[in-house]
Length: 188
View 1: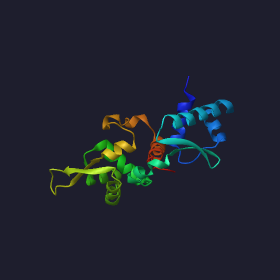
View 2: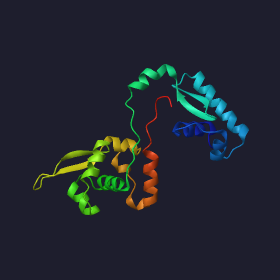
View 3: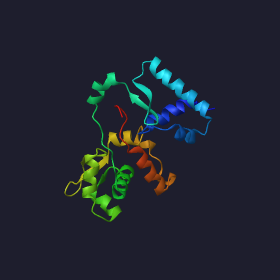
View 4: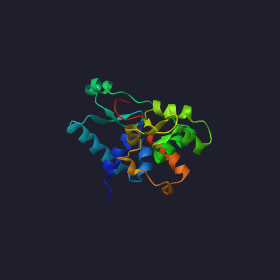
């Protein structure tokens, strides 16, 4: 048996916008009264327990929002921008993640195209880092994934990366889209 209130909280927390009752009913496939009760309980708990968020009914739906009294601290948080990665950037990131440490020449040998601009973009987005220089002629830079990469993909360590045999290309693209949303925090 699932805890409907906890599921509703998780869905609302993950949503970028208010979710209508109809949308919530569609997601959970439960009776309207049962859903309303879960929403009321969640709203009550947020108010009574002094949480940093409140459940508000806004824009014809429900949304978890931060309390206004915490605005000062929320403003201190560096807001991350929405990350859009092209297919080429996604491919390059996957090569770095699974082959690290890896040089740009090794990436380009696998992709058969120049990857300098893409590697630079991944560095700017803090998804990869320079891990040093290879002990080879020209001492090329070697790249590895960053701590931010682990955060974005919800991984504890690189050992948590799925095996390449565990997913199809379409599933990887969907996973990337789901995990590159802006971080939570702040009034929406």
